[in-house]
Length: 246
Image (tube, rainbow, N blue to C red; front, side, top):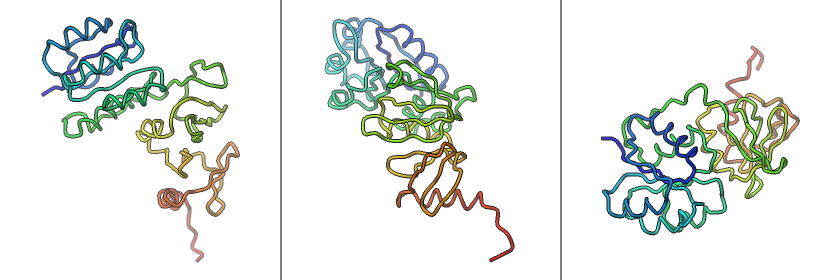
């Protein structure tokens, strides 16, 4: 049986984007999409329960936080979709099931559905399409303009508390997102591994190993944390050519 969902967002472009993601998954059915939160309030309150409500936060007349107070009981899972990470605390106070920070990739969307409905057929074996090879973030170093980041260009990601610093082969980007959030996105790609509680690295960009220190291709050095040593060392052993000498 398909999961029934509702989308509420005053931005028609955001609705069209999430519709395309929903249509990609064979087990989710869009019941209705609302651009008017007041109309959504009236119809959802008097309608049937659904499995998922995707809801924007910053909307006119009534915010997603306020709207969720009235309709939370009508859905099994409430997922906030917003461009503003500052609402995360309020969202989870409303027992939100997930928080998707725009712009989010199909990989992030699919992983969220998989996590919330792990027993649902046709979700847990989603294959990320080849063309989904990048994402956009707001670059704090460039007046918060959106910038494309290709997965193949990422050398490492460093946690800066509420921010992360993304090191690519060409530049460094600072964006307002938690390391735990970007880790969820990157885990779909086996080339990435956490090497330290503050660092995720691209294994193919390791240039040199000096004891417990990794030197990356861009001269960035990363200490291997105790909790992550086994995975990193296993990768290094796998890639090491052994000679006949002892």
